[in-house]
Image 1 (cartoon, rainbow over the protein chains, first blue to last red):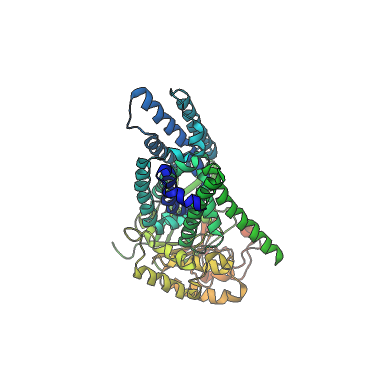
Image 2 (image 1 turned 90 degrees about the horizontal axis):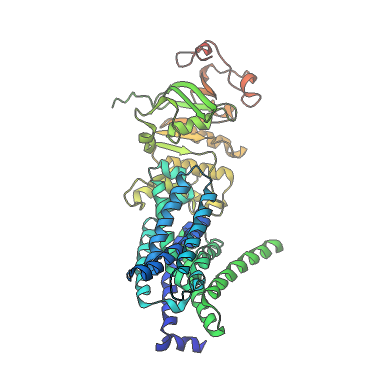
Length: 282
Length: 256
């Protein structure tokens, strides 16, 4: 453990520090937006958005190399695609007469497939694995700045819309009757979800990012009677999962993203099993 | 706007889900401070009628005016208690949070003011559930939840109250108290309530609408204890299809 803390201050291990900062910055956003997503039962939509992000990352890498658009970073590609996916998925789920889950499944897969094709057609060695499952070595100081800005936007909007978001999540029909533009709030929530996903794509990757959404919030829901309690507890669990996972992965030489997710999953399963046993003993 | 406008006016309203007609040529008018009960078989169109009045559904033909304007524009003045909440039992909200939702959308950014809280609290006092304010909503009994949802509707400060089966989960022990509360409300706002339990509501309403694709109006002043089984089976006991209705009522020949 001591070596982990000394590694954090080691100038040669700057990526470790960046990863920790990224995780700590992202935890409140995951706690707040994750709570809405879990309470609204939108995990599946969040999963689709996350997987679509690969398409944007791939397209950005492709354009950087083929058209020399250096400014079009994978991070920017991820942000644009995530927002676009959120709006499309939102409109589909609000308006489509098609079966919603089929359409969303299609968007999910097409986004990923496009990403893999773009990456395959981009010269130079790019490992899709590092985008799918995260790679803390790729985090740059600029990424951290972007994460910070997105974080402020997500947390700010997430908290400002608190009362109305709860009203919409709890009883959409009633909220609509009270004059709340519920479709707008649903789209807002999906867009905030999209931005939150982008925050942690670097660290845990697009496949597992959804775990950071649902696991802390779902664990927290077992101990919360109010939404804000759930947010607070989910944030705390997120911080512990990221901090603990990072140090474990460093100490045991394990891949970082999976270790963080395993820790979050461990808390969740422990709570469920613990509750189950408690109920059985009574 | 003249104050003698009817609270709810339906003219020749028809509604169908696809090919299935739910309501056909429904016309009626409800004056302010009138209290009306909707009865009728399941699938007869009671909830559909409420949703039309709320503007959640649009009729294929005919017009509905609520307080003289379209249902969408009048929405803010309607308090609605749904029969079923699309409700996630693990959703962590307190009773106060739920009642405050009656105030949601009334202010700019969605913050609740002290005034909002006072109105919500007053609604809870009126329904004798103020003691539950801090409790988690999911820890309540069905009857308690029902009252909280009425309190939420009341927190909208409505001119019209639409209640969908308010007596469905009420425990027999508190039924009388509940009845007194509803009766008190009927003095203040226009109440339209869906109920299976006509014996219960007939004492607080002045007219009963039988909804079964069409709407037949029965003044409760002419109700007798006679059983009408032709439409409702044993479910509803206290309406007699009277062929000499008062001016508020009608002759069935008009509709059939």
